[in-house]
Length: 266
Image 1 (tube, rainbow, N blue to C red):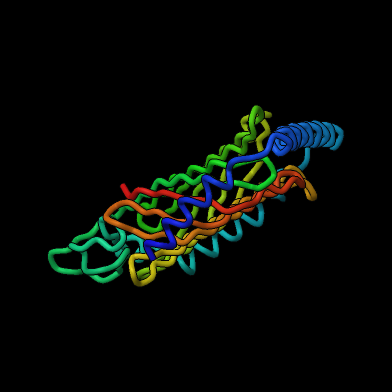
Image 2: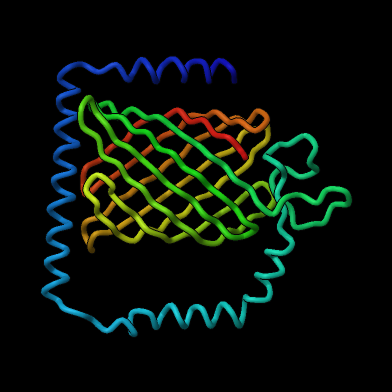
């Protein structure tokens, strides 16, 4: 296992040494992406202005019905679940009798009602562009929050994205699944949209865990932003190191490649 991590740590930096023509192509690709985002955002604003105001009551009717069903059928069960859920100080903590979370009271082991993880990864896309992704994930019992920040860059051009999301989680032992919605901003172009996504972690034997993350945002029915990330991580104390793959589709431009990731459990 140690040999595999050593190979990964050596290969990624070597793969990030680009040729000069790749650097030029990378800058041009990011420039074209920024231009496309600006054009689509302007067209969307013009379309909204021409369409005029719409009845907002109908658009919220579905949300209201869903909220009533949730409150009547699942409300009490959900609150009991929130009050019972506890987390280990960090995954694979030696002093904890459970791997990550539990719904069973353990005498002398109260656990935590919060769990916070910060991570950063660096990826190469083999086209003269690279990516840095930073994510802060927080659990307050069954409530989930995450802050997503990504920068795509080449030798002289860059594109930055920021998204803040909140939602609910299903946490069972060594597995969690979270669904969330929030706000999405392309900070380079000052473009806003709504975001939504799913994330999951599966804690495996041998201090390994699988981390999956997906985030979607939409300018309109056809123009969208897609971020997918998968990594296998090894945990030692509160730190984790891993390798994986990042895929990003930004208004039709694809940035994808392997990544190295480091995490810290607060």
